Length: 73
Image 1 (cartoon, rainbow, N blue to C red):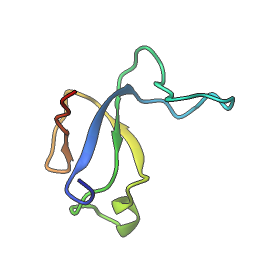
Image 2 (image 1 turned 90 degrees about the vertical axis):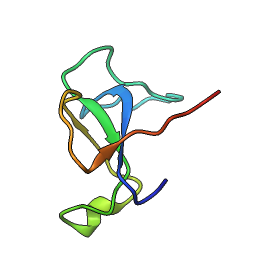
Image 3 (image 1 turned 180 degrees about the horizontal axis):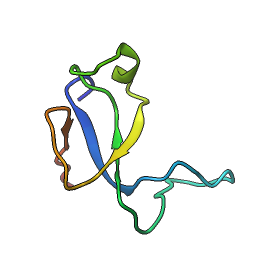
Image 4 (image 1 turned 135 degrees about the horizontal axis):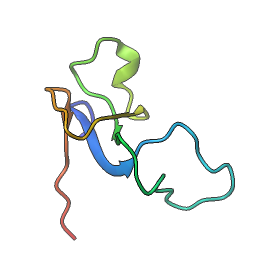
């Protein structure tokens, strides 16, 4: 999935994290922005194409840089 579009995540976005030992941190319980992870082909700068990129955006917005991955269990 790397390199197609940035991936919307269910977690709410925050700039601060618990610095202790945390397994699978989920972030805050509410917020204004959802987390967006990974990089895509249509970025302004090559550094934003990295898989490690983590940012956020209003979940009511949309553009051709954001997508989501369907996961079945």
